[in-house]
Image 1 (cartoon, rainbow, N blue to C red):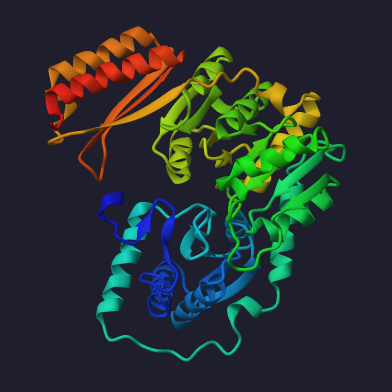
Image 2 (tube, rainbow, N blue to C red):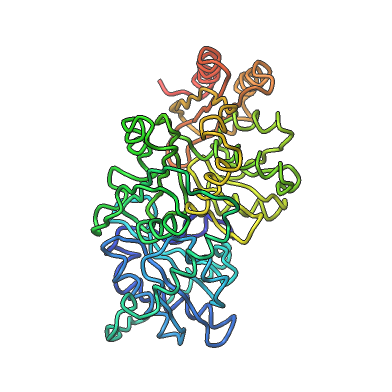
Length: 459
């Protein structure tokens, strides 16, 4: 079964506009019921933990999912507002058969989503998502049932504070150094991190100042957080040396981006570099290999190569990064967007809070500023150009385009990258070129674009 055969589940669960299909009160109940039935096939009397972000719709969606689960005789527990990796941790550490997160990550507050983790803390495989999806559609086609509302909504069930505390305590066990001297500005994106980051940083005695940590249901990701890292970086720059670094999370805090003390954005590629070097030093980088994606800059690949570290590329999506890590045994992987997966411990998914702790730990242990730790990452200029085409003929059937691509690869001689592909939704050819200089990048891009126009271009 392939991703293309699924209609509801994407690379990161089910997403849509809250209140519209598939996130209506009826469909979310049926999703919960179908998930519960799937779990019952694996084990009798299953247990599920549910968490949510700070969106206005997250409460009622969580309640409807819980009601659907209960209709399939599934015992449900609430962790309240918690990060996505927090639910992954609770699922694998507290004997739950699944963990469910109500969140749309970095999307606007009007959107929402449903992410599912199995009892081992990993996201469901595509084949299992497809089976659940088929049952959801089957139930939609049968006469709908309309159960009574919960008398006590899931979001008010006691015990959620203890579950969140267990996750925060586990994060604290991952720290190897003393972080108390660090001065940090933290952007919580008015999202799930607002529930855990202040308590975690206080427990670690980090000198932290928080921005965007007062969610109101509608301000999640609004001009803040990892979607807008320049906001944090600007605050750091204006503070003129008051902070050693900045940390910014997305809405469900499964990823983090950073700012150095001068107010320069530090992305996931740079974090992969500093983490790989540190893990290699202590013998934790299995096979001297990391997994990145097709979006990671060629500069990262070259910097790692100079350290004797191999970089593999997976499809975009932390789920696919993790699949490649498991297949190859790699202990570090991630995305330019800030999803970083550490497999030298117990983590099973990207975790922004854990990533932040690991970056601060490297800074403290090395005695180096963040800017110095990533100074050897020389980001290659990158250009993406679209060329409108009459038809999408496979490039390997067009010799003139193949010659242009081969000439580009010869000219780059391993110090750059060319990716030529068709758009999945439009009649466009996309050319991505990374090179050591702007001049070379533009020249190569125009040569390939010219070949495509000559062979396939519209008038």
